[in-house]
Length: 298
Image 1 (cartoon, rainbow, N blue to C red):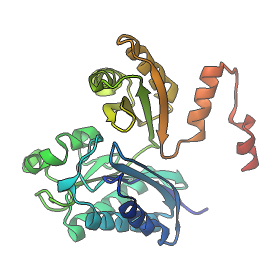
Image 2: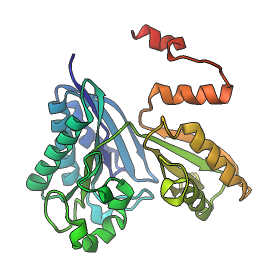
Image 3: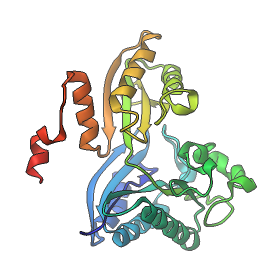
């Protein structure tokens, strides 16, 4: 059977539709890959793209995306609520079918080397491809963001894995890696107080003593005038969506703030949603084979 790998690059542009479509066209024009989804957020000023394909074509499409983004996005002028350090901020490879994590790690290394050498962009490897334990966590690498990296990159401990040892003013720096499927899950609060969202995020994320496989940050949705807890669940089998949802609700109560909605960015595994249905509906002994669409796809 053919090997299948997923790639979910994040770009620091969520407002200019022409730029976004021009970048995504690089996937559309690459044979052997399929564009599954893309979503943009004006407040985050960020676009998340999801595509799948064979290892070779997926890696080639990722390179084309990074190259096009470096031509069209100027990080020196970028502003947005989401933490970021580069025009192409992060590029993970995720094993889907008949491909190992080790193969995805090699894809990340090969792509990182090419981006560093040919595009003159500093590249850091993260998660399963990380060159050291300190670089496994994306938040550790990205700390200081674009503005702070002009000094951070001079620290020998933060020498890039590939590319120049100085910040690219226009394109910033890029993080490339291999990982387990991630769920980007955001919870909206019934308040315009960003400090409350930040306080809740601090409580629920692992680095703050919260959920083991959750990363979180508070952001402001300016167009709706509400605060949001933006969450990345890096292993939904060990930290479920419903666990994050309930902890946000619990922490919000101390401030007298309701949860008014939630959103999933990009794609989500069916099992993650079934786990939520099983939890909230209290379904006993539920099995994936009871899902009609799952049986039809066999």
